Image (cartoon, rainbow, N blue to C red; front, top):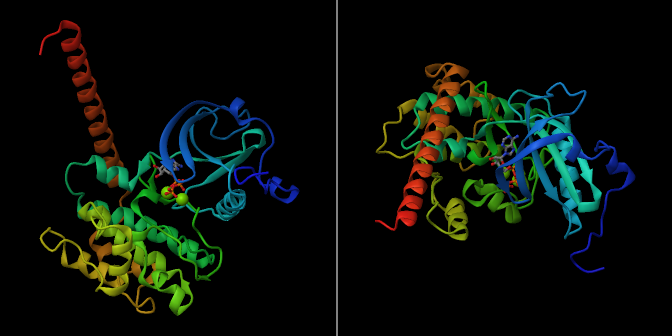
Length: 330
Ligand code: ATP
Ligand code: MG
Ligand code: MG
């Protein structure tokens, strides 16, 4: 056995998390919609005979566990966590399959249209403040639920916030989550990491407050289109997060005083002074921006239109290029 052979496969205990049968026969029209550290995510048509979502789209995260033996343990950890969670602002796990022969796990989830990061990438300018507030409020509801269940997400960022067709934002990607109310390992994505995670090796444990810091950074990422220090390398950014004052929104943009004030309650370097998710939901920023899922539905529609236009433009450009090549003109 070498380092690339599986040394920890599914035990009998693990197998209870998986439905038997070959998922290749139950889902069709797989199309890649996302990519992450573990592999690709696909949109597929649900053809399971007894499924409530038969004939509708589902998302399938295919994860390979060949290679390091801890990988399978990590995948089962993610599944165990997701399985417990039932909330409108947490992406719903449907079912899991094991393709033992290929060393693959398929995690079938509710289908979302894309992430908040995709929205920001596609939109040519800034989102409206009220749109940012709709997304952040939903994530706070999700975080409040997670923290009351003693789960720390540890990787909150726009790429892990998904949007559903009916205008809800949902927390996704539980690959880094901890199922204890306090933790001490160095886990997360550098630019979004709370100072106490970076310093945990020195000062001990941290709590769910780390997710509120990362959400503060995510506010900046969604509103100003990039998290702070994104142009620096990850090591330099980690050093700065630990050493410098908390970042703020772009002072030259038109963000309201209330938004600045809300953000300063999340981006407190001392986790004990930071708002909890429940406290954050009481902030007057959410009174100024009333709950309205329709606003996100419209933003999603606008984004879809832009993607279609960009696709059409690209097809036209490719078509023109092809014509030039065939006709030999310029
Ligand atoms: P990371 O590198 O962030 O750890 P990961 O391998 O853990 O990634 P996810 O973050 O779960 O994977 O998914 C990667 C991407 O796939 C997401 O950013 C999103 O674009 C897409 N995606 C994931 N789940 C869904 C879903 N349920 N519906 C639609 N798209 C999804
Ligand atoms: Mg992710
Ligand atoms: Mg992940």
